[in-house]
Length: 311
Image (cartoon, rainbow, N blue to C red; front, side):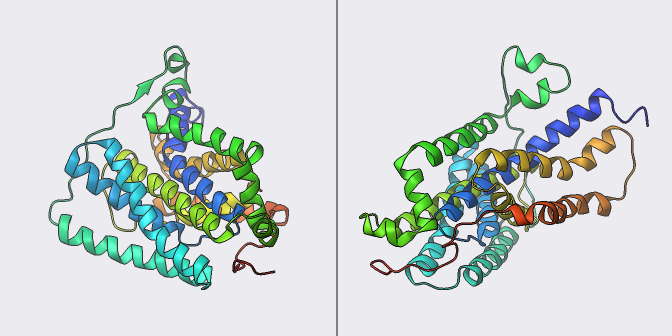
């Protein structure tokens, strides 16, 4: 037991939590934007998967990690677009359409991957990191937190930016109103349908980048169904954070630590069945729902279709 809590163990745990948690963070932030605007975006899992495939495909053919992120964002938005059209503009069920888009993205990406890469399974080169002088030399947490790919720092910055937008801008107030009382926002002259559509597209963009990170940085390869429920964990994070982006950040790190426990335990020389380790994040989800489910705060108009000019 004394060999468990060592510096390599904690370094591996923090590094793994950050690597596994960043896609959850971006997915949770995106879902939070949708929910603020009154849209329950069940299709976020499919957006992440489309982003993972699009990001890997673009990065593989161009050799640019940043173009890969752009490809991931476009892939996520490609899945978000029918969500915006069918649910927000035509009023179809957000749950049914979201599940259909997720299943469609799973099948489409698996089929495309089979035809393009089933024989080769190519890998991407390791992504360069950016060390922050001084901070990266801190024992234990320094290399894990402050010597990461630049996209990690940008994702953390996105948390601060989202929090600022929610609290201090007219856009944040409009998003809040779209989820709380859309008819009042409509009466104020703001197009609720357009605002909700843009919120869903922003969700697709963030979720797609999160999926691209999984393929380009986390794994270096695309594998069908590689998101493995990460989008649904992002939904839980958004709901339990109660509209606070920093709540999504801490929750993502917690679930990321659960996902990375296998690697950290292997570093510490502890042998645990793989099935048990893979079960940890979902046990954590159930625990969070049991302990904090009653405290979740959701917009009154969440999932309710709104027709412009309606009351």
